[in-house]
Length: 531
Image (cartoon, rainbow, N blue to C red; front, side):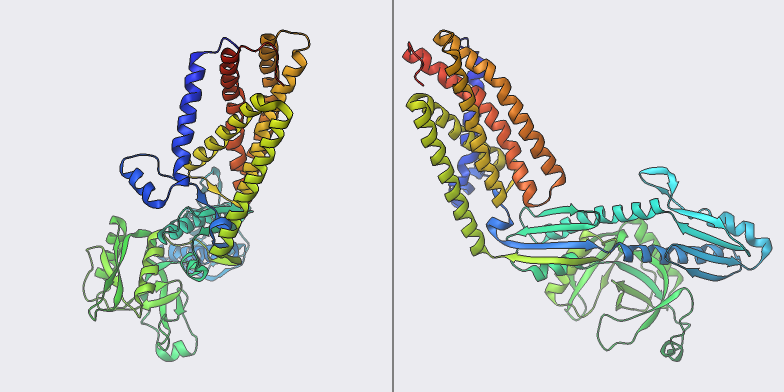
């Protein structure tokens, strides 16, 4: 121990400077932090979680049943379109919850129909050997396209993953700082938005499916047939977004979808009312140009989440790849719609299972109580170490503890970790675990001094206690990582604080305490161990 390497001393000095520089902004006012940022000095602070800052909490459930129904409807249209393109006669096209069935009326065309329909199944992205649909030859010239269980599970998992990313983009568009968006269980999503005081706006932005499609209006249907509910196969009756306007029959075939959008922005129409300007990518512009060129003089419907926003008549081919959606939007509604369109369409609807709001006053009260509890815990640790090991060894332990706290705050500031109320509990536990390492070292020295010299006792105290310290902290680290991997929300906040605390505790106990003891020994040249 007395042969202390210089690199260890420099590492302790560098770590201490790092801790001071990166933790200091947490105790400075905003204007000072802004000045520091101009000079490229550390200015980041801890992010306060929902329970400390206030904000909104939503528990959302991805409607996988609606997703399955949509997949079934899409497959039905794919079957109809495929058979019509090949001029194959069919009847009895019907869907169940698990399959789409069709009867080929001409026996001579059965094999050709089977060959064409076998092109519809797709391999699963993560398991190419498995298909999402099985095409089965049935009795009486019937072909059945059945969804596989693996395909259904893959669709659900993909929908949840995609929904998380889209929700994240939509929440970010609101300017919410450091939102927490996590998967919970198989098909649930937790959204914590610190500082977001309007949960209704959050629900509007997150919950809107934002599924935008462009489809042709079916003008072969007379108003009387519409009133009688006689809608031909391949078409559907959709309401208008504007109250009072009649329903329209539109063809189910989608010309272009919102997936091809590259940009959306708030603009104004010819009457200076808020509107939405949009632009397609190359593929979308090509599809839109071809569709409008082939249907001049006909109407096409702009459909958002199953409602017709507008249904203009095509005057000429629109080949520029851009256009405008007009309607009875307010400026706020147009702005919110632009944000959700930019974020992309949700693959399935989201249902709000739980909602709560934490007020800023309640958050401030939690911060005050957290600071008070941390201070009390720190004072108790200081008093215990001084009483148990005296001013010299107790003071060294307290100095290492302060360094540990500073480094912990600095590390959380650098990683932009979110501090929650359970995170404060993890911080207090870290302080207790950190001082426990000093107790192990000191108690080992007490035992060794009975059979060794002072230098031998100091050396043996460190070398033999370090193994125990590492064992204890590795166990704690394992528990923290398990909580972080499988926990959610506050549990992850606690686990993250504890994980960082394990590393800072080991560093301060093994290195900083050792440097201070070496410095004390070389300065005081003691004859006995003052414990």
